Length: 371
Figure 1: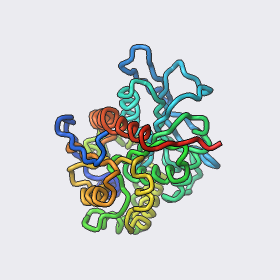
Figure 2 (figure 1 turned 90 degrees about the horizontal axis):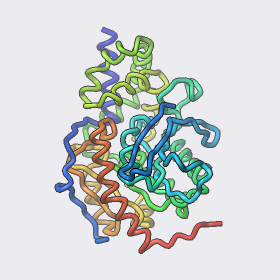
Figure 3 (figure 1 turned 180 degrees about the vertical axis):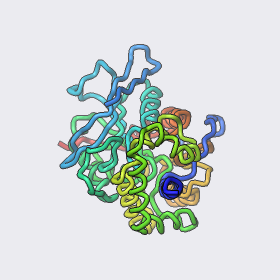
Figure 4 (figure 1 turned 180 degrees about the horizontal axis):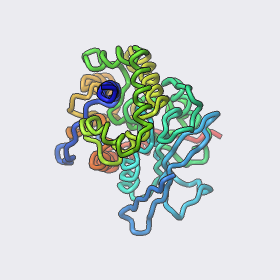
């Protein structure tokens, strides 16, 4: 009875933040683009360039007063003192655990043939391991904005240029990074961006009700923590219905059984979600988007994604014709939990979105570096 209750509540909670997921094979010929412009576990990846091999680890770094996890892929013959590199920083959604984006980061690095460093920046309070953060501490979405900005200040000062790729609420954080560091951040790509609440979505309204019910969140967190105390194989079995309903790949399913069966993990996911849903109950920041329209791109999908709805895409196109938008018809919100989804979205970014942004940057945006 306790197990059934836990799985049901946990599934409802996670479902609201990650979205219902269906995965299909990406077909490049069906890609639609709308734009007014015509222009510590070792992670291994190898690009199509036979001379490039990437090495990286899930690393712990300090950002301001806090620690966080990162995954960094760079050529094995490039050391940390090499400053003439470009960097793509992936800013995750909620939960902001880097290992959910491991396949995506490796696929993106491979797609770009090792020409840039690819870093996935974990959110503060969100990690795949225990003991990294103070027990009982929770962080808001505004804390995550400060976290991304501090990372750019402290860890990217000597990087030649930075491109931010934000997924879901990570797109909002990436835009705030651009606002704070316009001379460092070359451009921003938002994949299924969550920029404002969707008043047309009953699922999102239920999600807001759920995370604001602190009793329910407490019960979910406690019961998830109980599951986290049993053997890993049993955890996987108990969460099988959840992971299968999201069509998670084996890596994501195993990570969920380890990282999301902890009291603090559930509390942080729900607390951050509560602040997201409360704060974003207002229109997008059109002034910010207009100011950097040539440096921002968004990817939407045809699926029933209530975090990045198609009406938002239409509003952006109507208000900001200089801002590039793309339509991927194949994937839903949780693409990063599928190996194939990660590869196909990386292909989309590597072949279409990022090259277009590079052209915009070269032609339209003279960016002298501040001294």
